[in-house]
Length: 154
Image (cartoon, rainbow, N blue to C red):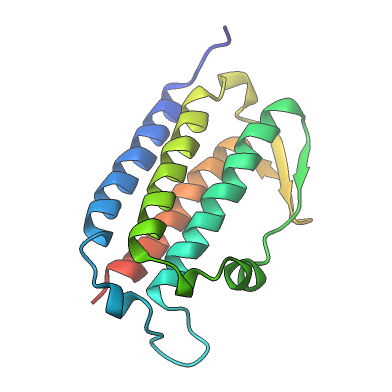
């Protein structure tokens, strides 16, 4: 078995903890409110959470596949079409919270198992400059926290 890094175990624990904490808070939001758009052209809370679901799904694939090749290239994420195709605004809030929380547990499990010798795998997403797999995983948590702050604002 390859050596695992303490840094990835800590990162996985942070992803799990943030997801569990946020899911508990998000479940308390009113279904009637989470589908309201704050302004024309702006996402409602359901769509923001849907975007986080897409992020978890895309990053799960990236974190798995990056362990099999160096450099690793993956297509970008077209957020507006993805959110529209999934029709997040029309779906149950409870379902969306459950799906997002479950996907985060899956992402955390993958992150936790990344061997230390794969952390510097060069990853290029959507033609962007390559970054390390470790940085990509750290950015996942940063991105999640950014959008959770949007969701948790009154």
